Length: 238
Image (tube, rainbow, N blue to C red):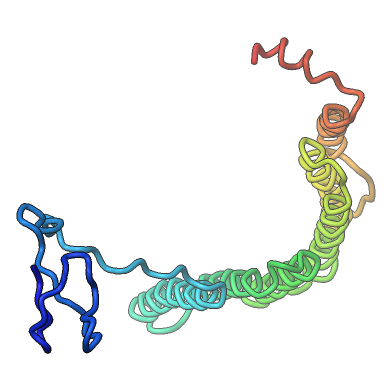
């Protein structure tokens, strides 16, 4: 039977505290009850908490900046080492700087698609202006680069707004994107034809329209409530 370590009083096995001094009774394990064995493998480290959104953004900014800066410095050094001055590397610098700006804009404005679309197109516009200056041909910027970039930004904005307002998203999202591409091709055809041939009108973009518009209508029809999806499953055997 156990004893109280302070009073020396013998107590019953089922008593947890000494009846005199209320000291907890220390009980030895019964024979054959040595407790659970120690695990063969040590316990692992506590789980690492997931990264917060701000931490992910900071890591993305750091990685993208280093990833752009290393090739930029490399090509600049190679260009200067070979030619003893900066020549072709200026094009690479402009391209990488534009890509870096697009990455940063995407990280900061990914929740605002309209702002993101216009900032990306603004970056492209600045890039085309710089390239035109480097090539010594800035005259094509106003009649070609500016209207094409503005048209692309306009169609992208309209497509984003249309997609956001769609109640049922599916193949109709692809239809909206293809329709925006068709109008952008028509704008490109018109602008380039006017600039290169001094002749306004549409040429090759009509072929693009004749292919994309029926596809767009089909995609809209597939997503509409009138379309019978069971027939499509039977047709493709799924």
